[in-house]
Length: 73
Image (cartoon, rainbow, N blue to C red; front, side):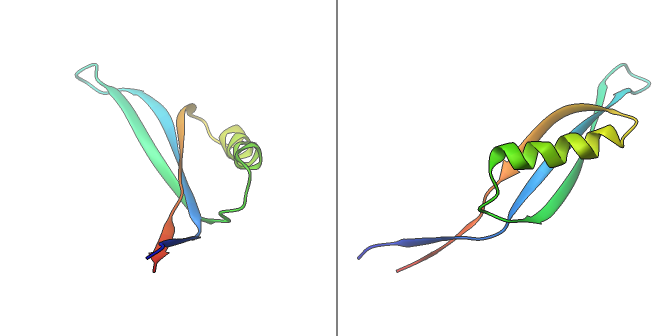
């Protein structure tokens, strides 16, 4: 039987570099933005991320896009 994959809303996790702690270890904090349209292109997502980053005082450390799908038969 065929499995049908239906895209659900995506999320992006934006990681910010907060410097180092007292032990000298790097501190990375993550902000998650959910309900991103699954049809949004990666370029459009990065445009939004760059806009968000420009409003922050901390430096961008990384971006993850998490795509979710529902599976059915």
